[in-house]
Length: 313
Image 1 (cartoon, helix red, strand yellow):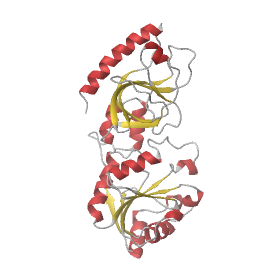
Image 2 (cartoon, one colour):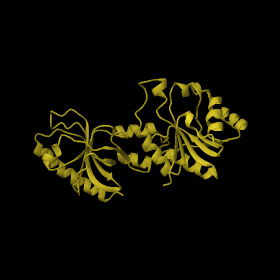
Image 3 (cartoon, helix red, strand yellow):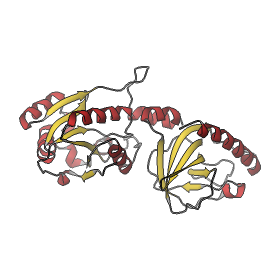
Image 4 (tube, helix red, strand yellow):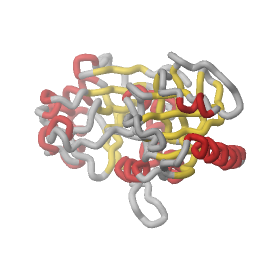
């Protein structure tokens, strides 16, 4: 993967006269629909630099605080996935009061024309931009005629039932624990990452030591439950059983935790950053009468998870 150039904020735009093929959007999840946009952008870019303009937060966070959805990816995860898909430059604009007050004509001039020397812009048919969402495909085309960039429209990617693949759809599926379905919409496993910290060491007592992620986790956590997962650490991948939620067997634990038991190896990962890929949902969290009964269920879970991971790429 070639390095990607990243610009943060309006003041960081290169303004260097180098021609760029640009697409604009939140790109939360970098799902199949987003990848179709990227693929089309790459095919039409020619010698222009493939560039994504994205935002550091959902517009609702500024315009209607408290109504914004939880992001599927952190900014750094999103940038890495865009780079892996072939994007050479990512412009991250803070969706703050300044940006939300920028008129559509000013956006085209400041960002697309002067900031990025855009040659072509690729957007969806429902694209809106500028203060109050007043800018449309028609205004963008008119501004493109003035500033010298072309505007193309990309179609939606739909499921068999005709429903548009969207970040909202993926959030809903994750909230239900349907990570295997999400994998089909992402063309990869949904993952989170973070630094391994000290847990309650319940698993170690039961014979199942775990790597615990509790704070500053990047990526949207799915529904509580037990999952078949893979843990990635320093480029190596390990099969793991992962539980997410409040363990009801231990009544003194009220904190939601993410715990992964590496099944084929024993590693001390404390202080290390790991990525957890969610492959499939196994069962809901449940309360057991004794710790021993929980340990017996964990052994059964592990056998199911081994079978799933052995048959899943």
